[in-house]
Image 1: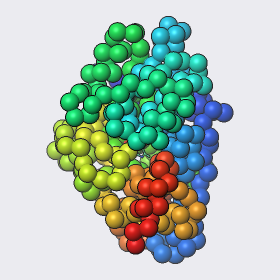
Image 2: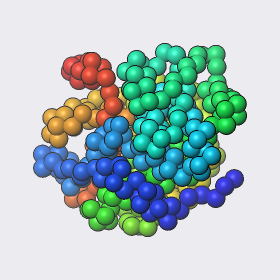
Image 3: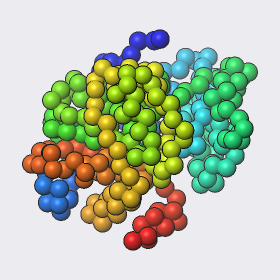
Image 4: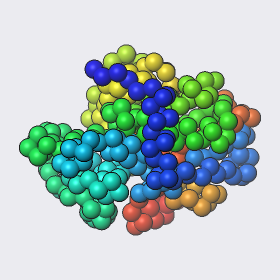
Length: 321
Ligand SMILES: *Cc1c(COP(=O)(O)O)cnc(C)c1O
């Protein structure tokens, strides 16, 4: 196994994405603070380029390609934000991109990926294995495969969001971070370890799939079936070797949020902060609500990871009650 990325790699990633990725704003709401009895600061990666933090990791990884890798191109498999992050990064760097997506991926996502100039290759998610297809394409055409979370440059890039937050806000008492495959949380742990060692990290999974919590408790990577949840950015089946390695060492607290709590948080973001946040991006606030009592009076960060959601679906979720 390759060595785990370290905080120095996050610093390096920050210099590579500077001037390309947005330094996203940190927002707060007096009304939310009053409701929760603490001081909350929201790092708004829903306002990042392409609408999610994933641009940070993808751009960092692609910016390190050798001339030969650049000429041959990149391949990624994803139906979500990683696809758009790789497609946009590739376009900015002049690298051809191939994205492997399920044939029944939402039209909006396929269109967005094509809009960034990516070539889309579809597969049947019930009968075919996307990792195999990605690997086969990589081999046949000499493409470099960039996975969505288990890659040192991806992890280091994702860690730059929390680094900016600590730079802007100082060492917080706690920080809530959505958890899927663990790229964002493990990168965050690297930044917290260096800049805010006393900050308590909470990784937040959908209630339907708590493989991350179980993995840390059992000391091995637990695999689960694709969880049924509206948090589609965290529908991962397992942590990666690198992300698990970092999380084992840094030992964040892993908690969960239900779909109803996510919808509640979506409504709070829209009402008080005027922010459109996708369900996965609501994991942090949803969990903070549950844990507000133990954090009374503290300064607490919430990583708002993304804002990509179809408007009809957004309206339908918020219209329900
Ligand atoms: C990918 C994603 C996550 C989960 O990130 P991991 O690095 O897989 O843990 C959370 N929120 C959004 C919006 C995402 O796109």
